[in-house]
Length: 258
Image (cartoon, rainbow, N blue to C red; front, side, top):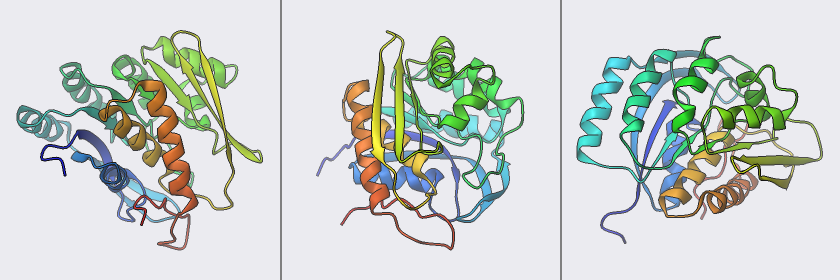
């Protein structure tokens, strides 16, 4: 056992069901033998079907927590999930700018059950303040379209998000119709990669959080960006194949293999 394992800093919401958010991050990273440094960006009222309420962490408290934490422990990567308010963005951006580590951002804008989780102006603020600091952005197709409402197609959305400053955009297609799930990765060098995954019969709660955390885990372990994106998808697909039922709604990825 490593006496000083790799560390990933996660800023995510707290899901009482344990399917998404910070618990998804911790379980995914633990499965990769990585220690999680964690801050709660929002409390939520939710179940396995939908989110009913989001209460953002005060930005001043978040700033104090980050200052104290990062003075003592340096992460090898950062994973951003649900951010509670636009007021948190400048605080998070200021701290990320002082870290020279990969950043994975899962832009959680809407719950799987359909509830909006952020205010109308949040997507533009996210693009302007955080994307220049992001290594890998992992929106699903609906999130990509909301971030780039004037995008002609998903490729156009990816190009616009790259122009905002992030190094790689992985747009996932689990929320799109079709017999297969099609994911696309877009890079600054104009390269595009495409993955086809078999569509599983269930619907899932926490799949996006799991994927972003798995990619952050691989980056913290030293993988290249391309290898981390590929390995993160493979690991997540396996977790979805062993998903568990906790509540009466969507299934939770099986992140702790036997």
